[in-house]
Image (tube, rainbow over all chains, first blue to last red; front, side, top):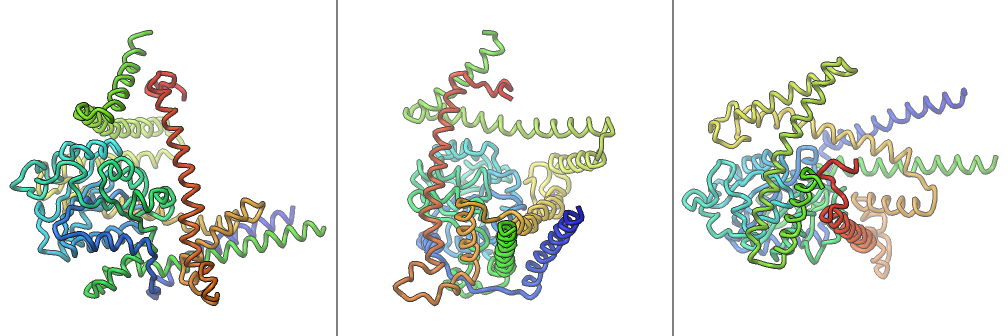
Length: 292
Length: 226
């Protein structure tokens, strides 16, 4: 009984020490702004090359399927993609299948497109089509009749209104787009856009996914999906490529994921240490029990 | 068969057949689009049902003064304020016809300064639980758990700057065994194979389930099988 009590106390104390360790592992690199140079993987280079190859005025469907819970991983991807696409001068058609998505699109439009690319005009260079309920059914309708799925933008302007939304004129179906870029954090997301949208329409698709959701997308790579940015690391690698190609972007707001890699790396190292320590104790205890 | 049972069954049968046939008969495409639009509209009504269910559940808890009913009061209050801000577009600079998330609106403020931080904060707590679980539960118990542990260990290490350093001493002829090269192999061969197997299995399962629903063997739309 005495031993059990001691173990219980050790368990509670141990858990508190782990929590405190994790707090320090995340906050110290944040305060000291510890970051590391990223070496982009071939998949991230492929995604970058896909966007780099887009002609000026290409039409890109920009989908933001995530919520604030996953924003720590997905926002840097969304911003990096938006920045790169605007630098290429392509037309952006923003939409979301998540009810919490419109606020994320608004933020990107306000903080990236409007602020960094003042020449981008609403209705001519980018349009915000907002949220539509129905998950994959929306994709199925957009596949053959895009304006039926999205009949108005977020300002209630009809997508048939050629005077106010001239960039919607050439859009008939999903095949009207040159590329789909989807930053997704779960359902509905890339796993719906790839089989129900990109494959039947024959439109290339790339995107980003939270790290835990990425294994679901890997079966589609590289044939059906050009590649995905996986978690903060994928976003950081993409930012690194952007900085190498466009040195004028060397500003704090363009290095968000690179800065977040510091705390994540230290936290990962701590978890590795805990796995080793936990297994060391486990094996030592097993050895002692066997000896007894 | 009663009318109550026959009508939903008939709707399911007709819609399913039209949707399947429309995939192969292009002239039926507009019909498929209409049915899919109906689905989108019905999906929007799910929000109304969800809201009603939330209010009903918490109102019952408040009425009975059940344990923790104070949280229910907060929940209904927050729901009511957010709903009013969104429906009436309070503070919206472009008025009632404008974008619900327009800058300056009360709804946008709630999402940005209340919902967003609360949602992110809850998700961030995972880091602490994962760290604790890594220490307490991720153990070498048998062959399968050892394979999983070694794979997870390599992937975690490979996603840090140490990943490149620990195997950089390997000679050029063993370059394939360097961690930065092992990680893509794990992701593109065993992981992809496993994921594809699961994906194909799920697809076959979905076909079987759909057939059971179309043929009326399973009737989830009538609340059966709960």
